[in-house]
Image (cartoon, helix red, strand yellow):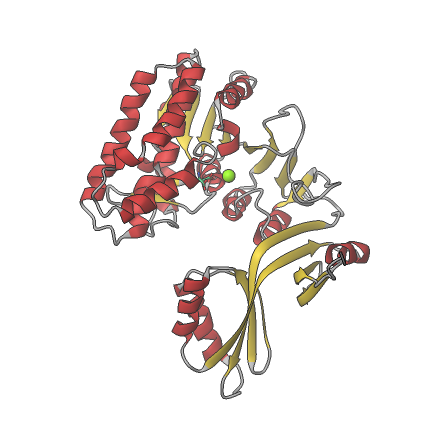
Length: 432
Ligand code: ASP
Ligand code: MG
């Protein structure tokens, strides 16, 4: 079965014009059968995170439907502009909400991650239902698929792990059945089904990963991720001038880039497609005729410098109070405590009596909790508001220009990668 998998993210369906654009992109592929994986409309997931918090805070005093009005209205407004049957759409939305409500009624609000998933997943159900209705009503042969029936995960809410052994055969059977009468299958990214009736999610920005799972299961000829940028660039164009498009990238380079924090594709996306040598095409939905970036076994012979910047980093310097050596037992305690708090490390280094690590700032309360869970044998120095700059294939003038007027707190050099943890230098105030 040769077919294509496309993924469209939140920005690409942010309003009715964008949704019309998706229609014209998929139509331009003629007779091709396409699985279209879609995330929630732009900003909706963030809004639903707040709804989930409000639902938890209201302690079951407020029905979910009341808290969802704004989100429903936002979708209906675009639906009106698309000219689709909004009555039918509204009923469908209400039925998704009442399904979630029924499940929420059976659990205690202390299961926060579980509550979160039942609410935040509505974003993808809403967006895909609207897009599919529009495609069908405007004459395309499409069908809507509830991904939760075929992508199965464990019960680790908010960051579920996909069970490939169960999901892959489900995906194959269901997709080939649906393709026998439909040309386009519209389904949700980011969400999955646990082995109970409860919905799980795969972690923020997880739709790319969903699309990769489909490509893997279907042995797709290609996976295309449609973005608001021309492809994968040498740096974030919102931050830097003169960024360059990387026309080709090896799987390995793509994994390295996402590991170092490049957000253009989700870090988990590459592995499944690399496994089967499926090409990943990252290209612009704004200029769909441009080539974009192809990620495959074959990268560029020479890469230009690639820069990834991460803000809001925190450097934590951990010392043993009795000045004993930092040994394996200390390290394993530090690692397991990090894992327990789900704090991910970006860079680390150990010396005889200290261990330094750089993490995304988890916020004061969580940091305090982390430090107290490590116990009394350690003392801590904390430096926050830092930037972590990673440069691959760096050249000295570039390093100099990126660190100008900055204090370098930490530096790590490996073969083709330099990582710098920096903070703005003190500057003299101009005299008045
Ligand atoms: N809608 C989800 C999010 O905003 C998943 C995704 O966009 O990939 O995180
Ligand atoms: Mg995204």
